[in-house]
Amino acid sequence: MFYDHDADLSLIQGRHVAVLGYGSQGHAHALSLRDSGVDVRVGLQPGSKSREKAESDGLRVLTPAEACEEADLVMVLIPDHLQRQVYAEAIAPSLVEGDALFFAHGLNIRYGLIQPPADVDVVMVAPKGPGHLVRRQFNEGRGVPALVAVEQDASGNALALGLSYAKGIGATRAGVLKTTFKEETETDLFGEQAVLCGGVSELIKAGFDTLVEAGYQPEAAYFECLHEMKLIVDLMYEGGISKMYWSVSDTAEFGGYTRGPRLINDQTRAEMKKILGEIQDGTFTRELVDEFDAGQPNFAKRREAEQAEQIEQVGAKLRPLMSWLSDSED
Ligand code: NAD
Ligand code: MG
Ligand code: MG
Ligand code: MG
Ligand code: MG
Image (tube, rainbow, N blue to C red; front, side, top):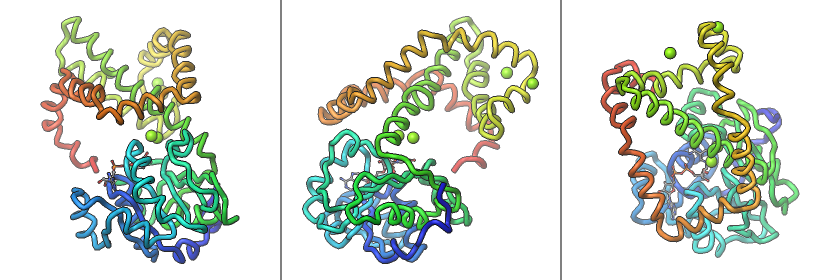
């Protein structure tokens, strides 16, 4: 792990940085770099909704092409499926020898969607937390841990530059772990598909549906299957699965040990391996690129259907009644 004393802030302070995008990560990086004494400009489309926000936060906003033209270090913080096009139109034309191209996720490099010239540094600084937390922690004198990776070391100093950037956004206060574009991309995709996003939400919905179909009140099913998830995960976050099992009743612990493996069984594990295989051999990314290139026909429909599900309707009615929730939200 790398910490503050392993990173030299003066490296990033000596660069002209363009942050492309001003969403979750973009705003956190641009503002924290600026507060760390770095020369930052933000690159956004002329009609972008983020423009006003970046300007009112006191940042210089240019078009992506103008920002890249001025910069010798470009951090790409726009949605992954748009990066290929923005690279071709706005980034590539002004990339010159000695420049650095930075990412917060490795997908476009790992799958060859973007192929930078050999004479630029290609580096990843990927905070392991949502952008709003990255910024809040920075302001409080703390940081969110991050991964750093070097795909191309044209300057011979790419890792030091990555660590310097990480220091500029507060990440070295918490710790920075070295990885590769390949490892970060494949583990990130697997985690979000099999466990964090896909796995957890399908588990919650299946539990909710089972109770509601059996005639129990949807409100009770919501509390049991969705609301309590956070309380359980918080315990795991604090002290691992053991702390969670220590905190719940022996009845819950016995039920979990005996029933859990019936759900996550050999068939589930085999399917997880298949999902990982599709990530490793590029099948998933091809599917992703095709879907977005075609204008998101299935993605948009699926998002709409998900939002219309009963568990979402029930939750929307219940959450405003839980006044204590608003305090804990960002
Ligand atoms: P986001 O969706 O929150 O924000 C995207 C930003 O890009 C917006 O400001 C949007 O206006 C801008 N944008 C869209 N099209 C553009 C264009 N053509 N030119 C310039 N700007 C454009 O994105 P995000 O979630 O911050 O993700 C950015 C990157 O960070 C991705 O690579 C993502 O994988 C990575 N990442 C995100 C998180 C996270 O917590 N959200 C965590 C780690 C890494
Ligand atoms: Mg992730
Ligand atoms: Mg991801
Ligand atoms: Mg219970
Ligand atoms: Mg117990």
